[in-house]
Length: 220
Image (cartoon, rainbow, N blue to C red; front, side, top):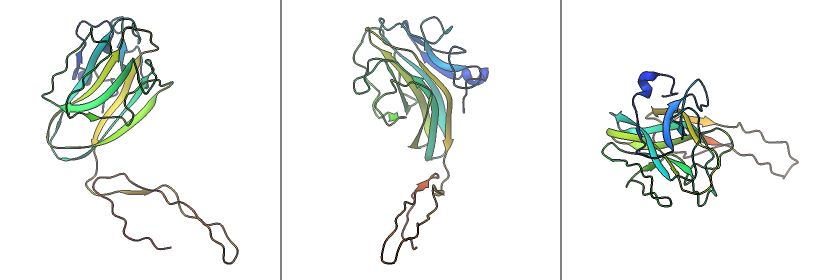
């Protein structure tokens, strides 16, 4: 896991900022917890913020190795305001995983089209991270084979108006258990009813481990 508090871990992050005005930095300008976080800045990392009138497509990534195939849980905290609307965002973040051989290139000219690498694994259910009003926690499960990967945070803004910047904290990658682990979110309690009437409730079952969970029979 990475909360951006350890300088040795922070040195493992790579920034592809090119000549863009708005760039990724690790520093004290924005964080969810602790003293430091990962954020977009237009003043060399002193503060979190961006110049919305200068196009920037930049990347921050962490290379990591998978030695054992399985399901992995990837989580992070994010606070991305940018500029919406969410169905056609102008300034936003995308979080994804690609194989280690994928090359990423910063772009300060293309204001409206960003081409993502082939076969990337998205780390959020919505198309982009944008229009957030506070810190949010995101968690995604991905099946990964042994190999080298990059965990990537992409920032893009066009050359028009904009809002506040983007920040990331508490990034974690952990292998899930090989066997299913069942959690039951609620117990079943049926209110008393008159003779001949019925009572209903809902049982929530979640697999928080790995592998397939097969439920074949439930008896009350």
